[in-house]
Length: 84
Image (cartoon, rainbow, N blue to C red; front, side, top):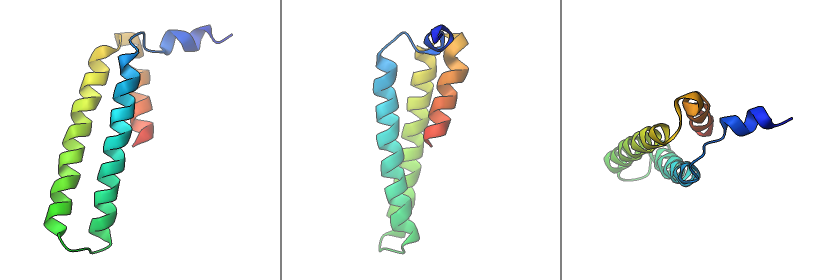
């Protein structure tokens, strides 16, 4: 019954480590955004942190997509987008 779902799952377990890294990056970026929106001191620093985390997330997304088979690339990208 879940055979179709198993075919979508990445075969390389390292992909899940990348998902975890991506989640930590999103968390760090969202904390910086919250600080920026709260008007805390260091607005420029928070903006730089947000950009740094965004760039880091882009690299993780590229690494994740390069590890997956072409058939599952869309499903993997969709999972990453849903976590943003």
